[in-house]
Image (cartoon, rainbow, N blue to C red; front, side, top):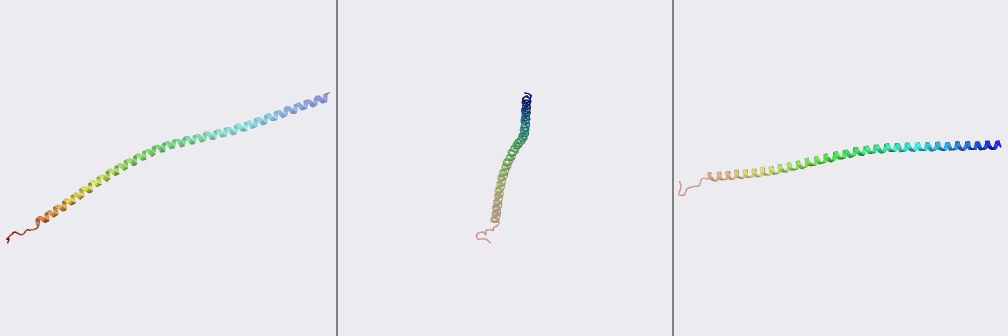
Length: 120
């Protein structure tokens, strides 16, 4: 019966067309998934670049911090040296002032006229 044959052929064509449409849909979903994965990979690469830059900056800051600490230690040592020198100068100044006061007292004592016994 040709009618039955025609119906079977139409059914096979419909099934084939449906299979092709499903295959195209799967292909489109796959392409969309690949695009999502590609975009995510680009974001990951950008993030890795940012992490690398941040790491590099952190290393630079670590070196700068070490240099600053060394400068502070050097400055502290210089300040301590100046403090000791100042104390020494002040001590010498006190000694000079005491010596000057003693010299003045001796001079004053020497200038006092002591009356002679049975004197004039």
